[in-house]
Image (cartoon, rainbow, N blue to C red; front, side):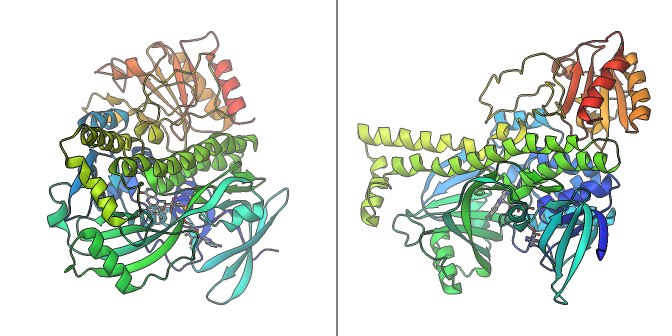
Length: 584
Ligand code: FDA
């Protein structure tokens, strides 16, 4: 007999675990979350919060989304990505990032009701954790996962109460491993991985210093410092990362992974800060130092039986592109509604298989992207002549050569410009963030081919209602002047049917089938004199079906299925689709 029973036990209160707990509690599912430490993230780590993640927060409630904006640095402060020799030194180049370029900003605005922003993990975690606990999650801090054993009906997990030193057991129907990059849950569940851990070494130096005078004219979250001859970090590139504008900062600095992690003393940390800022008189207040490794590894499958892993437990990669916490929260959004429906008896266990089918390819994609982004610094170093020598004097000469009035120097200037511009694949890869299209049993094809991408799919988001894609965001209007996004009409733990004039049959079918399957199906007719009007015509352009057609949207905003126009028996058609998706 276990000491505690709950429907879902979640290991970890990071972005993945806290988001899962918040979503499950919002859906009315009993859950408990544990963390081996006494509190949440104590260093900022993740910051870049993309639009898709903000849509998850918006789905949790406008209060949750608004609180995130309240604490975040806004998008306008994020995007003058600087490459320099130090913050006071020479600026080598700059690129507009994170939707700062007006063309990119337009794409952001067209894509989502939510805004990209810069929210440190020390704010994101409490936000999600508060939503979880205030809505019903039981949380136990200073409690460590030790091991688990699963059988046909559930999982028995052994935990250690770190305050008393005593072990106790928790019996749950499902176990969620959201325990980060060194996941013991994933290891004990026997998940198989591809790739390698520890391909690079990095240290974080968190410090306070007012650097406004060095950055006010070029507000950014990232300042890349290339210093020939720096004695740590190989070719000597460091990152000065804004934490709170403009008095709290994080320096990310490399160390040789083939050697033991360095003991970062206060004196050393101060030296690195002064060198990278370029001010030997600066008196930074060092808040903390830590080391971490660059990983290149992803789970081939993210679950085993009743154990489901997510977040860094399944995708381990460097911070490039700012995808870690974002993908972790999005894993949770994909998983929570499925688990909720299975636990409520609304869906069969087969629905959970789609979590693997949909999220494992994303894990591979983002790990590959983030590691590729590190490699793509290479052309910048090459163009600057930093790879030709390890002699600092020679390296400086190579950099200086670009200022000459010679054909070689002109070529070098061009190469530098192009190499910096190519970093758009790390710093403004909107498509990577928004283009996720799923293929699984939780999506029913409509027979039409997948639309090809008209532009680079890593850089540009392309809206489509092709089943498996995220529902396009379009603003709709009611008669009282209210404006809602199509994403606001969907989600919130329910399926949604969107249709237009002539689609009454779909609405009646949805009503009947909601009763039959004991699920919630929201319905919306969009058109003139209907509750929601497409006054601008954007919905008509985006929906890819006719007025009398239907789009069935899943609780995570992804299109489950669509019909081009009314059919002779809409109820039978919708029943077929729901049976298939819900494994009923
Ligand atoms: P995470 O590691 O955050 O949480 C794991 C949880 O499990 C913790 O609560 C831990 O205490 C707990 N735990 C572990 N073992 C346990 C056990 N045995 N028992 C009980 N509890 C246990 N991402 C991003 O999206 N945008 C960005 O800008 C950045 N930037 C960035 C910069 C730097 C320097 C780093 C190092 C990382 C980033 N990231 C990022 C990545 C991001 O920090 C990371 O992907 C997320 O924290 C992953 O969230 P998880 O919830 O999966 O794990």
